[in-house]
Image (cartoon, rainbow, N blue to C red; front, side, top):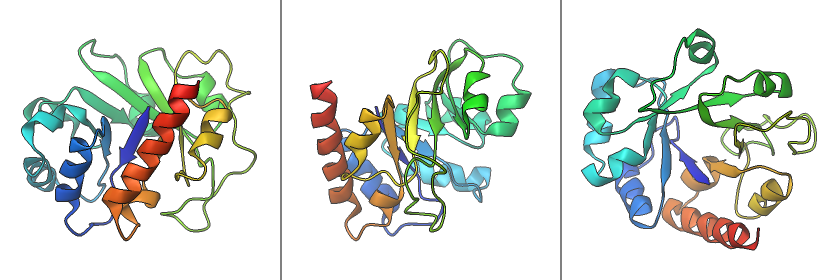
Length: 196
């Protein structure tokens, strides 16, 4: 599984590039723009072609999911701790930062991000506290997606460390050619995925 995260900062021609990435096979896009109002979110999503909107996972403004034609929601730590139930029609994800958090996840999450696995590209100075790996993650009932510093050169290492997928941000959006950066990572990941 290859996930593209939205850059929290605006990117020139961002939704044009995003539509091109969807055309090129992007299947999972996490829309996390903490500063976005509901109106900002609507304007952004209006720029995404309607047939791609089901590939969006919303990090904020969950109440807009039906309007956007998506059934994917991401819970941050506070939302996860407050969640009382899971709607069977929705696909939920969350983020964990240590093995204890992962091992205590309720069964309703389709996958969880874990990281940073490598030194972050989008947050300089933010990096892992140990070697990447999932060996301490208990029963592994929830697929784990590596996040943090993922790029074409190390995505195979993430798979070799036992992760079920990767999430990219800085290697794509902070590149001088985001579309080409995405395509390179996708090609590398797809080749790795076929060998396992």
